[in-house]
Length: 250
Length: 75
Image 1 (cartoon, helix red, strand yellow):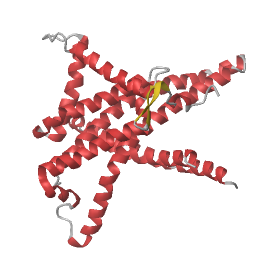
Image 2 (cartoon, each protein chain N blue to C red):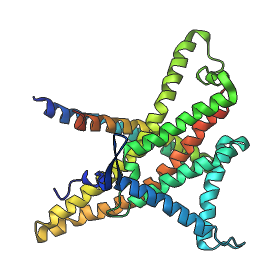
Image 3 (cartoon, rainbow over the protein chains, first blue to last red):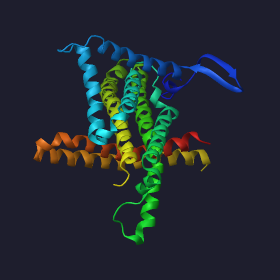
């Protein structure tokens, strides 16, 4: 079917599959667009920092604002000792932002609309929180699950709730990005499909197609907002979770 | 009613949960805006907190979308 809204998410092999050690490994369009994402980030930041002048050019301003946004975020949430996590947060933010933005181009594949990509990033972040927490505080890090000043009688229940909420973090972090990108792109395709089906009906249909066309334009603007916002939210939640690793007692 | 029809109806019902997330996000930004209009000087510092709250509320709505997708695509 021509206007199948799910078709845009299909992964197909570009090269391969090769059989390596019993696994079918192939170069897919998802891998291609991850490579394009990383290449785009590298190119923009390389060009932005190519000639540092006191009065920044337009591209240099973009690079400075990009850097400054994450720098401020890490400083505000993690404090001065969180500086060592700046490269991680900056890389995550850049990858998610550019992958979301590239996905807005027609016929481009959206890397972040697949749960395997976002869940890998989220599991990596929460795994890092556990590793850093235990590395910095030893077993004292588990005080994270025992809030300060709670009456002893309800402490087991509170600890259990804290533990379950910690376990749900990688799920919610990954699914939020995945769900936003998936739902947004499906809605765009559904409204575009209305336009196609209505124009096939003749003159009356073309007049009727004006409303869904306007809606599709408005939704495209909304999707650009969502693409930037979700990258920001992903980065700031990474900071908030890493803050638990650095300062476990609330 | 056969099982596949029940699945489709269940997926539709599961999406009602997204309305709750809509109410939550609306409350957060509505209250942020009313606070920001009372004290515009303090608004900039709290915008990040508003976004965190909205993201957490929205994440719960995404769960209901996932339930709907599971009902539709997992046999």
